[in-house]
Image (cartoon, rainbow over all chains, first blue to last red; front, side, top):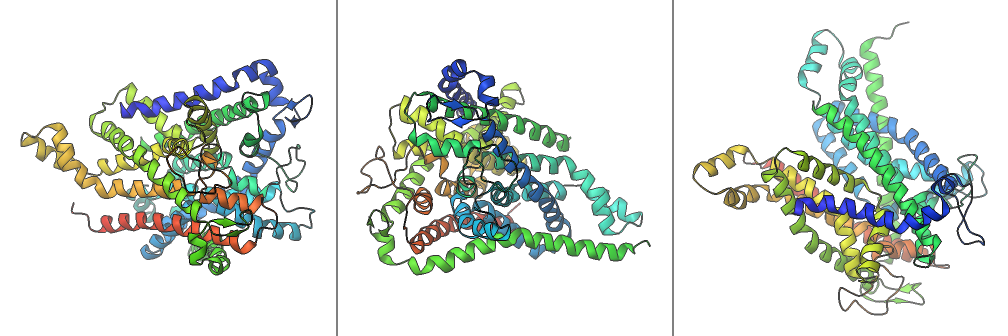
Length: 274
Length: 283
């Protein structure tokens, strides 16, 4: 019974999101909702196009990935294969602490330190940009990516490494050509789960990206993500209004995106177990 | 020119080391900046009094109490459900389609964005079940969110109990449930404890799920029951750092420091318990 509860919750979450957004999607049209270029929920007549929000989310996610993926893989290699045991325990402890820091605190520090820094370095009119969001999110997704990749690298069987070293390869050649390849499915799963975290993150992003719902042309302008839109506007809506229901429709889309990402990550994780 | 493989190895190790340092530097910066700027704000009065001047002064006592209320309430809801579910999955469930679906559902629950939980909690608990914006609505929302964490960690803990323990007990004629109750569960306690404490740390730092379900800007009194609205630390930090003009920066750092200390202490306890028991394992 308790085991079934998690299935029931997933169905309930989907059900409630679907029911709350159904009349909106039917009246406004799913296609218009996803491809509309203007998000003006409060103007008259209102316009509920989430294309700028989707592009905002994708842009920030993409930026965060470019920063986080190489750093995470390299750190995971270092922690798993190179660092002596004491240092490894200490680094793993730090990474767990990193994962535990609440997102509001990261957002707050981002606002106070990173945003002014970016404004000054790139000579912008505001430091609240997609770029700031990417940096903050890269940092927040690294613990997930590092610890899962580290597990994958660590679980590469000894005989693979021994085989390579017996053939005269240096330890580094072994790591680069044998270990990395064998751990790849696990690393990809780690990256997917990290991306899931990036797309779903709300508070920190809301605090550093400036929340302007325009379609961005560069990464140095303010953007607004899907998650931040829900968090920022939910409090102002009238229960049952179009605006209220449109936020649930955004929630539904987020739910579906993470669902798909999970399925992909799960596929790769299963591949390693075989 | 072909580089000497030994030299390549040295250079690569050094680069990997630098990157790792680069990855962990922000943690150290964040913690030190908050400690340095927040420490002067922490006084007994700050921790034990109500906010003043439209929350631009005074203390954060109600927010601390509110956070604890939410934590306790969530733990009471989540622990029995999560642990029972894990026992079922690990000890009873066969390898069939139902189990596979349940496992998939758990993985999915774990990765739904927190703000979507907020939306869901609002529509089911606040509106549909008419619990209003209250401690109980927030705690229920957070519980559903943390359920996968508790289930997975408990399951890992149960899984690491050697099957020889179970076989020994069963061969003595002890029933399946008694074996679980008196042999498996006691051996898995450290693992279960670690998972639970880790969830507490996450619950105390989450903002998005309680945004529409439990938290309010200011309440002039402490909560009387679980059906009251509350002030909560992470929300208080969010509001004071973004929405309150002329908010003294020192106080905001103070709030951040209290929250940080709370979350890091709780999660360090869980990490230390785990390291301790891993070293002192009897099998």
